Length: 184
Picture: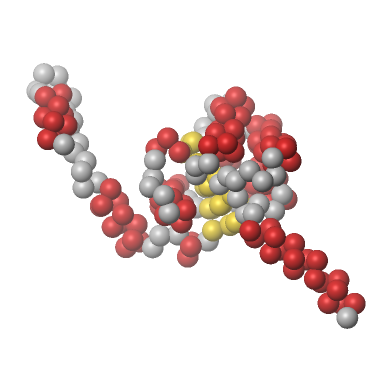
């Protein structure tokens, strides 16, 4: 009886935390980033949008990250953070602190963030901080699009795309693009 009573709060906490997992995390390779991006959009069941992606660089600053966090938290749409391992330790710490304070202020606020990393997630302050908040769902390779589905999705997305390129000016690239637009 005592053993079951002691275990019950842990099980209840796990069920409650599962309902509130707000961050989907994927660890992949550089070559797997596109597959991870499209897999996350598919998992959330929304169309991919370029303006929902934030690709970190070594020059990404705290103001940009702050804007990303506010956009994710208040917009009610799914956004993805790609390669957060490129952020400085200070910015990673600020990310966790700001998200934690927003969640404390508005605990019922619904938001979803996808995070795609290309390095071991255990060595990242940002990811460890988010995991300590128990809001992270880690997706494994088997949770992502398989190779066939990934290729089909890429083909479907590219059906209406035309690439017009030339290094020589004055060959009519702009005219071809205007004609293609007018057809639609």
